[in-house]
View 1 (tube, one colour):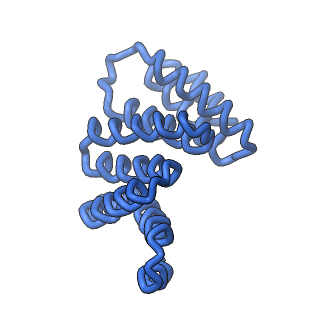
View 2 (tube, one colour):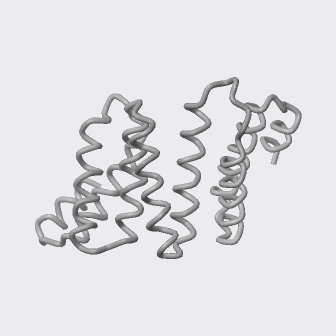
Length: 169
């Protein structure tokens, strides 16, 4: 990624720079100890995509930046960025990024809500849409993620038998 980033910077290819930065920020998502530098990378990617008027890249960059903020423990900030991605990607009809944003929203919501909460209607609907979109796209990894999150949802609801069914799929 670094080599590609160097090449596109040398060429002055702003769209290439934005894509390389997005790839870099996604590649290191989840490395909490390295969150700060990758927040800057994701922010730079988002800025470039916005300047270029690239809505698709902007939607993906929102998810990447949101993930970095969630890793940092700033759930509300991350969820706001996921919601922005969802709005932009719905406007584009980009089913993959819609699914990505929904999955990120559900994952963060389930992970940050209190255990005694039992109303997960929004998460249930979002997961159903995520599963449907990934199935339509033939994206098996996305289907697996949706099924896993359905299992986690059932666990949160105390339905461990149903959770196991989702995990077994």
